[in-house]
Length: 628
Image 1 (cartoon, rainbow, N blue to C red):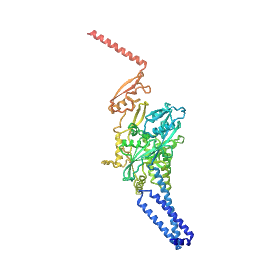
Image 2: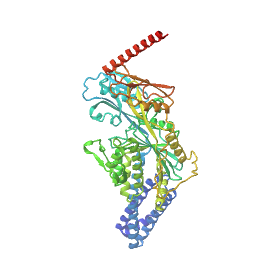
Image 3: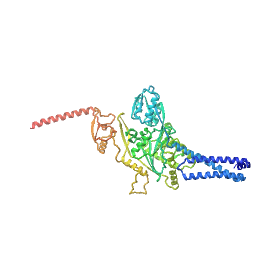
Image 4: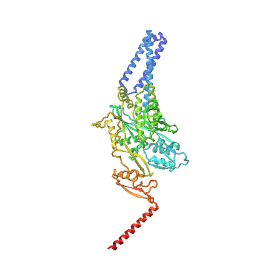
């Protein structure tokens, strides 16, 4: 060996140096590539092993053949072999770069060991003397209670504490100067942005603290080859990362079931104002978006209790990251159902995003505006969640049409900082098999994926807050509609067999429209409550009473009666005996008070009529006795 090496050096010193450098370069490239590709477990295992085997065979071949070509002074073959080796090394390093991007994105998305929670003590900017502080009384609330007490202890705060059952009452009291400060969660700006649209500028932060808690890490190593559920949660934050958004604005909740065998998905967007029992509030009912205040576990448990279906995985998506993702895709094609104007990603109305109705290509800012907007839509949030489903579909279709590695890299970069999931690394990698089958369907001119959409039929529900003596609007649901949706979800999860359709009507002249699961089903409302009858006509109330087997008692009241409502027109209901928002359980009758108005001359005429009646009665009796 020593003699051969000495002979090689003597033969041509420069060839030896080039040979040595190429060997080192090739070894480095193969080793780095090997390390990167080994981490892609469950992805084309046979192909990866075969590829690594061939690379190491080639490495041995180059070391042997290169040596021989130099010794035998076969310059031409040596140069050709060396060029091929350099090209292979460069290709391996390029692939290594992109594989490492994939690995980095997966690591950033996969179930993390730690969660970051942040709590604030805030006050109104014009408050100078702080004597009282509001504190939520839920001991399980990490940001609003646990961190709040740590801030009190760390800073030796001596304020008088007033405890609250919910954040809404606490923020109301802060704005009404009933308390001077309040402990809130990190998401308070987006959470209260609609009711207090300038809360970010109205308040200032007195104290802030962040703590780290270990996450419930999903340690399973299974492949996603069986049906599963994913809960998509929109984090409507102005931050560019999702790292610290553990308590978040739960306005966007979309449950997706996916069957990897059939490539069938069902999408169920849950209305933000749906009034349901909240798991982390001891079963007390509230709007489902408030469950996000209790963190991810509260949201998933609440949905599980509502549907009777486990939430296998979740994915939190930062809304602002949608801008980056769509830009990386060079826009998406979506049908805009209604024209509108909306604030930009920084919640700045001075830089409005306005769109016209119709099919069009949207950029990142336009897509986010379309996903957020609901105020001017005919059905508000119900229309918005349908728009969000269209956006999800459009993004999925565009992802299947990527052409370059640069586009792929940009998309991974945008996803990495803005998506957090409970999938572990191996489960994310197993999505490769699903994507491969979808691409094969596209090549075969088939649908890449079959998407079924659900539509929950809801009704307006009035909720009475006894403590605040206020009414708030929420949404109830029809049980028949929800049951249809649950059945479809379970069928796709193979928890229930599909019902065979025995009749089918087809009309060639009718334009086909995809059926929305649950739409049109309006039987059996959930936990009905008493509506707010104030301002309604008596006939409306009587019909409601008839429909719900409730006896309606009517009493006419004028301005002298305490039940008279000066804010309601004459002839309409001014008050009711049972407050709106009260459950109908154990209620058999309700009294409504209808406004009437008597002028002075009406009162005099009424008195005269009573006197005449008395006179007639008296005369009549006298005549009767005279006759007899």
